Amino acid sequence: MLTPSFSYDLAHRAGSRRPAIAAEVVRDGVPVRFGRLSALHLDSGSHVEARTDADGQALLDLTAPGRWSVAARDARRRTCAPPTTIEVGERGVTGVRLELGSPAGELLVDVRGADGLPVTASHLTVVDAAGHPVTATLVDGLAHVRGLRAGPCRIEVPPSYGHLGTTVLDVLVDEGSLLSCTAVVPAGGLVAGRVLQGGAIQYAAVVALLDAEGTEIERTRTDADGCFLLGTGLRSSRDLTVVAASGPQTLHATSAAVADVVVLTGTYRDLGDLHLPTTGAGAVWASRTRAVAGMKLPSTRV
Image (tube, rainbow, N blue to C red; front, side, top):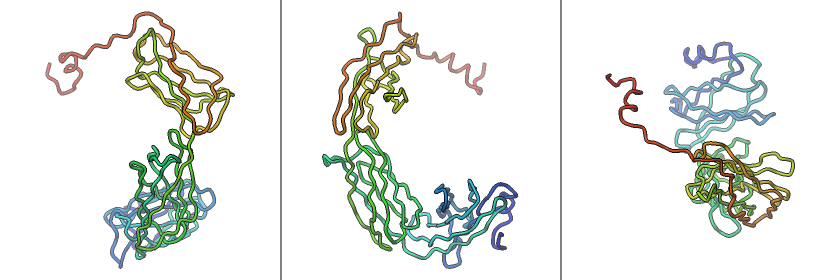
């Protein structure tokens, strides 16, 4: 049931749709603007996030009914509220009020490979003691994670080029303090090469890596030098196949494959040049003239 403190607009937006949570975040009785809400389904593990409005209220559209754990942080992730567990029905809106008060902890994570160099992963996830995930961006192997509740946390680093993913357990976080830790990610395998056609470098050619059953593992495109690099979390594997298809420089699509590729964990496998069959003249790229470009603009006078 919704409490009288929730605005009419919030309840009207909810209506009788699928399960939803109408949350209100306050601190010392004052609504918290742009607060961060997190809802975690305790059975399936699905996660939903939202931001509060100017009145400190937000509507969380849920994926399923059941027991949900709801937590809140302020906009700068300086303070947090303890998670509240509520039962949500199959239809309608369930209201909850969260009070911010506990100082949040911070974690500085240094993610490096076995060689001591920063990994190329774009982000990592820290799961707090209540199971709520917090995602942070990795820059040069460093991530500053804020808004963590006190207690043991779990750091999850996803796979990246040349590295396997890793999980660091039982990282203790204290209230209002900044702690640092290091996550060492084991090395994976890499497959590299260059795509040519008629002796010319193929830019933006599609290169796919297939396993022994023919299932696609990874896909990428060649850079301006015609080179490609595959190996996001790639472990030791045999009977791999690398398939290269021509890019936009070719009028007719052609492909070439290298079979029986063996990759070992922690090694770099260079396949050399992959030569695509020549199918005639290449595509000719012409710049759009100013007159043609102007005719396509809706505000151009004719």
